[in-house]
Each structure stands twice: as C-alpha cells, then as structure tokens.
Amino acid sequence: MAMVKANAYGHGVLPIVHFASEELGAKNFGLATLSEAIEIREELPQLKAELYVFSDVQIALKDGSEIYLNRRILPVISQLSDLEFFLAHRDFSHCPLVLKFNTGMNRLGLGMDEVSQVIDLLKKSGRKSIHHLMTHLASSSKGLEHEQNKRQIENYLALKKDFRASAIEIEHSSLANSGAIEEKIANVDGTTSFVRPGLMLFGGGHSSEIISRLETYILHSFPVKKGTPIGYEGILAPSDGQILIMALGYGDGITNSYQGVELNYRGQRGYIFGRVNMDMAQVFFPEGDYFNHHDPKGETLILWGDRGREGFDKLVKQAKLIPYEAYCLLSRRIPRVYTS
Ligand SMILES: *Cc1c(COP(=O)(O)O)cnc(C)c1O
Image 1 (tube, rainbow, N blue to C red):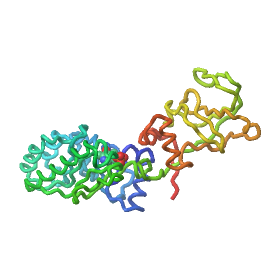
Image 2 (cartoon, helix red, strand yellow):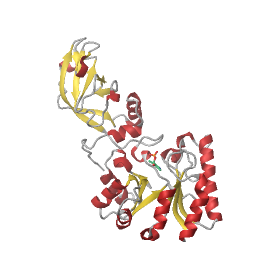
Image 3 (cartoon, rainbow, N blue to C red):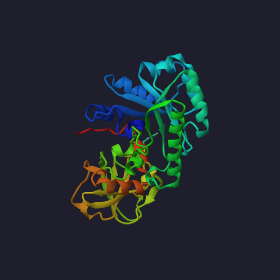
Image 4 (cartoon, rainbow, N blue to C red):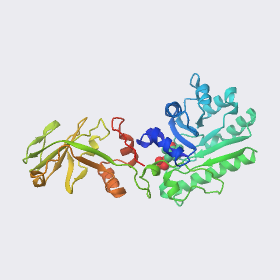
C-alpha cells in the first residue's frame, strides 16, 4: 500500500498515483483525509486501485456513506464511535471493514481495552471477517529490539489471536511503514500481508535514494561590502562578498528555518542569509571574486537532488527539519516536472 497522503509527500499526488498504478502495478493507496481520496477519484476516474482514508475519515458526515461507497473509498476505522456508525449503517454492510488499533503509539487507534467490545459489535452485526487490520509503530526505525516496538508487536499478535479465537477472520494485516520495512519488521508473524511505505518511496528513509531535485533560478546578483544591511530587518553582511537572490521563499515552502543552509553554485559555497521573504531569499557567498567575471542572473540554483541522499540529509538537518517536513512544506506554487 503506497502512502501518498499530503500530496504524495509534496511530490504531486495525481502523477505519482498514476505512475505507481500504471507503471509499478500498485493497487492500494493510503491517504490521510477524505478530500484527498475524493480528489484522486475525480481526477483519475480510470484508476483501478483501492483508496484508504486513514485519519480524517469524516465517516459520520452527512452523505458520508454515499461518498465512500459511490467512489469506492475505504475508511480506516480507528474509533469505537465510527465503528458503531459504520456497522449500524445498512449502506456499509458490503463495505470491507478496515480497523486500525493503538498498540502503544497512543495517537489514533482502537484501544487494546476495546477489543472485546469490537468483537461483540462485529458479532452482533453478523460480520465474520476484518478485511484489513492495521497498527502503526511509534519508533519503527529503532528496530525489533526496541522496548516499545516489542510491546507494540506483542499487542499486535495478541489482537490477531483474540479475533481468531472469536472466529473472526483477518483477511489482511499490516504494521510497517518505511522505518519498519528497513528494519525488516514488516512481517513479524508470517501472516502480515501488507506494508505501508511512504517516505521511502520518495527518498528519505535509511536506504532509499531521493527521487526529486529542487531547483530554482537566480533573479539578481550584486557585490556587497562588509556591514551592508541585507533585506528585511537589515541583517548586516558579515564580510565582503556577493549576494544572489533566489526565486524561492516561504510562499514556496522554503521557510525561515532555512536560514544558514549551505548551497553550492558552480562549486562556490554560499548560504541562505538574513530573513527569508515570501517569494525570494538572499544567498550570501563570502568569496565573491568568482562573480567578477560570471553573472549568475537567470542561472539555475539547486537546493537538493544534485548531491544525492547525503546532500539532501545535510540540507534538511541544517534547516532544522525532518525529511517529511522538507517535502510537505513545498507549496503548490512550485511547478512539479516529471521525467521518466
Ligand atoms: C504515513 C503513514 C505511513 C507511512 O509512513 P512512512 O514513515 O512515511 O513510511 C504508514 N502508515 C500509516 C498509518 C501512516 O499514517
């Protein structure tokens, strides 16, 4: 199940889903909100794949059942009240049941202390199977020996046992995100049939290469003397050098946390300097001589993608972000260009 919530981690959900489905044969996609799933169904009407909505399911919405059933969207149920609603609603009686349990992450999820209630509800409604049973690990990348992971996996196995003991079949199950897949804890019991990678599809896990390059271009360039005030709040140039103005700002997702992030331009080392603006940012190059005989105006400046995973990891760290944030921050204003 390819997790493509938040605009496919900023990469543009429609082309990514189309490619994953047509070229890679992906048949299941995970979204966070109902509106994300609706967008895919409306924009990709030919798509032959299941869509799962994980967190903002809005199942009790007026016309909720119609929205789910008519567009073939599956709610991932993680609260008892939603389960009651789902089972009480005749329209949902043929809709596959997907349950997510809280095995110790303590975020969303049906509680371990609610298992017997869930079993009673299923029995009363005549359900004999769970289509897909899920849980999610809090510290997946810490591996199988991590105490919290051990406890969560114990709970996951106990859940399955409880359902089977009550003659409720579990058709599919999953617990692994990218970190868990990389730590090889995807199929702990031999019957876990799915994995749910997100970040590793795009690069950013331990082992995966990034699939994107973020580039912009240079709007303007000029030499500065030490002490020249630059941009908003007049932050003073720390030395003589060259300022390049790049065409990315917080309106594009390059927030002020990018201040100080190192960038390379044709082997010259600079860094994002002063306040980031909505539509642009200053990049300061202390060794300005190079620019005496080269005008960078209109040229390309690459933020990530030219120095592989290492370059990306370094940039994200300097920006005080995690890879997920760097991707998701990218606003719709940035054109996504796809090559394959
Ligand atoms: C987002 C998400 C994933 C994917 O996580 P990654 O760390 O990006 O691989 C898997 N499962 C659930 C429930 C999620 O919300």
